[in-house]
Length: 182
Image (cartoon, rainbow, N blue to C red):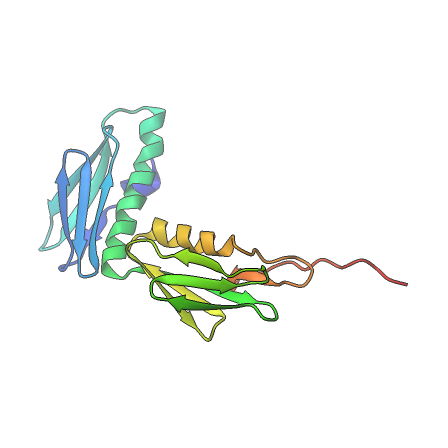
């Protein structure tokens, strides 16, 4: 059995969970998220000492059920954290002349191409630009925040010789030594 899957998920006062068949809906102060859980995983809601607790149990002791046990628990826990606190990813742009700006809900990147690159923010994601080189992506869905950050980073990945490009904040890019001259 999964050690992560055995752990309980504690819901605070402002967060409510609704479980119907294999769909889990979490509502909180920042919004509402839904996740479909596999049929071989059962989600149980317990009211213990004025505190709501979610427990996950496997219906069959198969390899697939054990694999999905910890995953399902982590997905639901990320939903609880998302509707309570939200998630953020910070990106920074390095390079001479590289900059970014917002145009409504669209992010415009000037990162060395002959044209500016336009990226539309998905529904539920907020993108904020600080000082032309710092991009902050925030939202309640952890998967969507990470996917949006990866999509922006993929426009111009940091290159290993000069370190120019878009990188996550505090990301370490190993530098390579260039061609040796005479």
